[in-house]
Amino acid sequence: MIQTPDQPTKASVDAHVAQKIRYYRQRAGLTLNHLAVLLEDISFQQLQKYESGANRVSSSRLYQIANVLSVPISNFFPRAAQVSSNVLSLSEEKELESLVMEGPFSKEVFTLMSSCMQIEDHDRRKKVLDLCQNLVDGFVEFDED
Image 1 (spheres, rainbow, N blue to C red):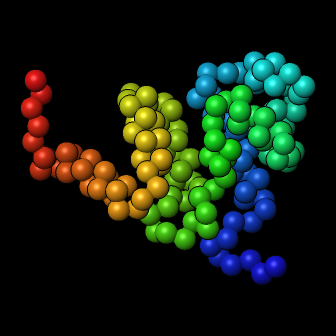
Image 2: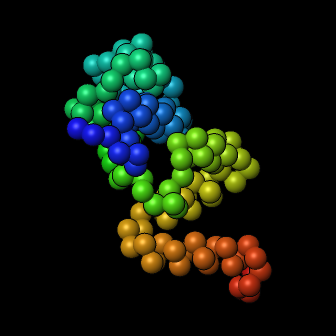
Protein backbone atom coordinates (compact mmCIF):
# COMPACT_ATOMS: atom_id res chain seq x y z
CA MET A 1 0.00 0.00 0.00
CA ILE A 2 1.35 3.42 -0.94
CA GLN A 3 1.27 5.91 1.89
CA THR A 4 0.01 9.37 0.96
CA PRO A 5 0.88 12.43 3.06
CA ASP A 6 -2.58 12.75 4.58
CA GLN A 7 -2.89 9.11 5.64
CA PRO A 8 -1.67 8.34 9.15
CA THR A 9 0.92 5.58 9.45
CA LYS A 10 0.50 2.53 11.69
CA ALA A 11 3.05 3.97 14.09
CA SER A 12 1.34 7.36 14.27
CA VAL A 13 -2.05 5.74 14.89
CA ASP A 14 -0.54 3.56 17.64
CA ALA A 15 1.07 6.62 19.24
CA HIS A 16 -2.21 8.53 19.01
CA VAL A 17 -4.16 5.67 20.63
CA ALA A 18 -1.56 5.50 23.43
CA GLN A 19 -1.87 9.25 24.08
CA LYS A 20 -5.65 9.07 24.09
CA ILE A 21 -5.71 6.21 26.61
CA ARG A 22 -3.60 8.28 28.96
CA TYR A 23 -5.64 11.43 28.32
CA TYR A 24 -9.02 9.79 28.99
CA ARG A 25 -7.69 7.90 32.04
CA GLN A 26 -6.39 11.15 33.54
CA ARG A 27 -9.59 12.98 32.61
CA ALA A 28 -11.51 10.33 34.54
CA GLY A 29 -9.24 10.94 37.54
CA LEU A 30 -7.90 7.38 37.54
CA THR A 31 -4.43 6.14 38.29
CA LEU A 32 -2.93 3.37 36.19
CA ASN A 33 -3.45 1.00 39.09
CA HIS A 34 -7.11 1.96 39.53
CA LEU A 35 -7.83 1.50 35.82
CA ALA A 36 -6.11 -1.88 35.93
CA VAL A 37 -8.38 -2.92 38.80
CA LEU A 38 -11.47 -1.76 36.87
CA LEU A 39 -10.35 -3.73 33.80
CA GLU A 40 -9.84 -6.77 36.08
CA ASP A 41 -7.56 -8.87 33.87
CA ILE A 42 -4.66 -6.53 33.17
CA SER A 43 -1.64 -5.41 35.15
CA PHE A 44 -0.53 -1.90 35.98
CA GLN A 45 2.65 -2.58 33.99
CA GLN A 46 0.74 -3.59 30.86
CA LEU A 47 -1.35 -0.43 30.98
CA GLN A 48 1.83 1.58 31.41
CA LYS A 49 3.22 -0.08 28.27
CA TYR A 50 0.05 0.77 26.35
CA GLU A 51 0.21 4.41 27.39
CA SER A 52 3.90 4.75 26.60
CA GLY A 53 3.41 3.12 23.21
CA ALA A 54 5.78 0.28 24.05
CA ASN A 55 3.00 -2.27 23.38
CA ARG A 56 0.20 -2.05 20.84
CA VAL A 57 -3.36 -2.28 22.10
CA SER A 58 -5.59 -4.97 20.63
CA SER A 59 -8.99 -3.94 19.38
CA SER A 60 -10.78 -6.00 22.03
CA ARG A 61 -8.66 -4.46 24.80
CA LEU A 62 -9.25 -0.94 23.44
CA TYR A 63 -12.98 -1.66 23.35
CA GLN A 64 -12.81 -2.73 27.00
CA ILE A 65 -10.81 0.38 27.98
CA ALA A 66 -13.26 2.64 26.12
CA ASN A 67 -16.21 1.07 27.95
CA VAL A 68 -14.60 1.43 31.38
CA LEU A 69 -13.69 5.07 30.66
CA SER A 70 -17.15 5.72 29.13
CA VAL A 71 -15.66 7.06 25.91
CA PRO A 72 -16.71 6.13 22.37
CA ILE A 73 -13.99 3.95 20.86
CA SER A 74 -13.79 6.28 17.86
CA ASN A 75 -12.39 8.98 20.17
CA PHE A 76 -9.14 7.02 20.42
CA PHE A 77 -8.34 7.34 16.72
CA PRO A 78 -7.11 10.29 14.68
CA ARG A 79 -9.80 12.10 12.73
CA ALA A 80 -10.44 10.42 9.37
CA ALA A 81 -7.65 11.21 6.92
CA GLN A 82 -7.02 14.59 8.61
CA VAL A 83 -7.15 16.32 5.24
CA SER A 84 -8.91 19.49 6.37
CA SER A 85 -6.87 22.55 7.20
CA ASN A 86 -9.13 22.95 10.25
CA VAL A 87 -7.70 19.78 11.80
CA LEU A 88 -4.95 20.29 14.34
CA SER A 89 -1.60 18.58 13.98
CA LEU A 90 -0.74 16.00 16.63
CA SER A 91 1.59 18.48 18.38
CA GLU A 92 -1.09 21.23 18.29
CA GLU A 93 -3.67 18.78 19.64
CA LYS A 94 -1.31 17.71 22.44
CA GLU A 95 -0.64 21.35 23.38
CA LEU A 96 -4.36 22.12 23.37
CA GLU A 97 -5.10 19.04 25.50
CA SER A 98 -2.54 20.17 28.10
CA LEU A 99 -4.17 23.62 28.20
CA VAL A 100 -7.59 22.03 28.60
CA MET A 101 -6.42 19.69 31.36
CA GLU A 102 -4.39 22.27 33.29
CA GLY A 103 -5.96 25.65 32.48
CA PRO A 104 -8.11 27.70 34.85
CA PHE A 105 -11.24 26.96 32.83
CA SER A 106 -10.42 23.33 32.10
CA LYS A 107 -13.90 21.93 32.75
CA GLU A 108 -15.65 24.58 30.67
CA VAL A 109 -13.16 24.33 27.80
CA PHE A 110 -13.38 20.56 27.75
CA THR A 111 -17.20 20.67 27.78
CA LEU A 112 -17.23 23.17 24.90
CA MET A 113 -14.73 21.14 22.87
CA SER A 114 -16.56 17.87 23.50
CA SER A 115 -19.87 19.41 22.50
CA CYS A 116 -18.46 20.89 19.29
CA MET A 117 -16.83 17.58 18.36
CA GLN A 118 -20.23 15.89 18.57
CA ILE A 119 -21.74 18.21 15.94
CA GLU A 120 -21.33 16.18 12.77
CA ASP A 121 -22.73 18.79 10.37
CA HIS A 122 -19.83 21.02 9.29
CA ASP A 123 -22.03 24.11 8.71
CA ARG A 124 -23.62 23.87 12.17
CA ARG A 125 -20.23 23.35 13.82
CA LYS A 126 -18.89 26.40 11.94
CA LYS A 127 -21.85 28.49 13.17
CA VAL A 128 -21.12 27.54 16.77
CA LEU A 129 -17.46 28.43 16.33
CA ASP A 130 -18.39 31.73 14.66
CA LEU A 131 -20.74 32.53 17.56
CA CYS A 132 -17.96 31.89 20.06
CA GLN A 133 -15.56 34.07 18.08
CA ASN A 134 -18.15 36.83 17.85
CA LEU A 135 -18.66 36.71 21.60
CA VAL A 136 -14.92 37.07 22.07
CA ASP A 137 -14.76 39.93 19.59
CA GLY A 138 -17.66 41.69 21.31
CA PHE A 139 -20.04 41.67 18.36
CA VAL A 140 -22.78 39.77 20.11
CA GLU A 141 -24.42 41.42 23.10
CA PHE A 142 -26.41 39.50 25.68
CA ASP A 143 -28.10 40.25 28.97
CA GLU A 144 -26.35 38.95 32.05
CA ASP A 145 -29.58 38.84 34.10
